[in-house]
Image (tube, rainbow, N blue to C red):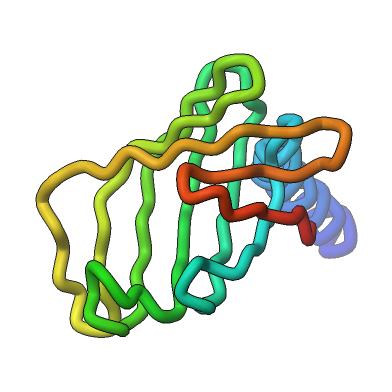
Length: 133
C-alpha cells in the first residue's frame, strides 16, 4: 500500500513539474528568443535576453555593465515588452540604475533590426548584437 501511494505521489509530482516546465521551455521558442551580447559604443558589455514565441510580444531584459550616460558609469537594466514587426523589434521599458535601484520614471523605447542572413541584431546606435544562446 505504501509503494502505491509513493508511486502515485511521484506520478503526480512529475505531472505537475511537466505542466510547469513545458510552458517555460516553449516560451523561448520565437525566432528572436535567446541571449544576445554586444559591446556598446563606450566599450561596455551589453546583454539582451529575449523570451517568448514572438507571435505578438516578447519579454525582454537589457543589461549594460557600465551605463556611462544615464547611470554615471554604474550598471543599468531595462525590462519590458518587445514588439516584433517584420525584422524590427521595439522594446518599451523602464531604466533602473544598479546597484542602488534608481528608477527613471520615463519609458525608454529601444529599437533593433534583425538580419536573418547573419543572425544579428543592430540597435539604434548601429551596435551589432550576436546571439550567444
